[in-house]
Length: 237
Image 1 (cartoon, helix red, strand yellow):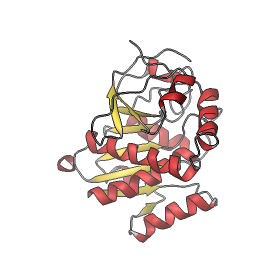
Image 2 (cartoon, rainbow, N blue to C red):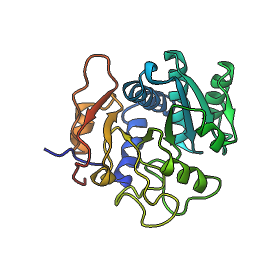
Image 3 (cartoon, rainbow, N blue to C red):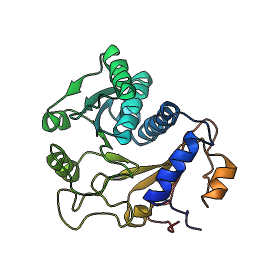
Image 4 (cartoon, rainbow, N blue to C red):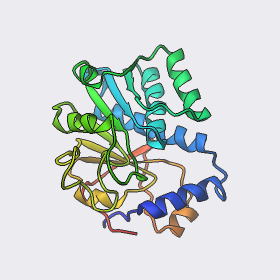
């Protein structure tokens, strides 16, 4: 049975409900999302296969998830590097970057060079709220993600993809198919076009809220914050 998917509109509504009726703070949700991302990396890229992780972060919540994931990855024993060209002045993001700098995790402005000095890449540039045109400096970054032979994990959506219809027909993201995707809270409709390994993350949704939004909760094992599910499946909610 295909997993139910969550449209961008309903994903935004669910986030708001989690922070109101669910009593979660945005800090909590971002921490849990980033923890899930870090565990997906651990499953995809064991330390024995290479410790260097390049985390590409956008200016919004998707980028914040990447910053949190990098902190956890450092504590697992990885060597993360952060590409975060449009750093938010919001207090939450400032605190996340301070936490990384306190761990002496390097930030780079040269994505191309960093790409040649890593073993795995996390695409945390754009999430479910992305729409419209990819603006500088991200077109060349997304082209590099498309063309690299290194494994790429996309957070919630491959950057530049349309949340409903999937990969773009033109522009820097045309032909971009990352090796893996982690859908946060629930898959988005684009998963019908995705062909790599697919994880669900965000082990905090109550059964009542999942039922309200018509979602299937995956079977999380033990302490895992992620569950792998078949790719390319989903029906629109």
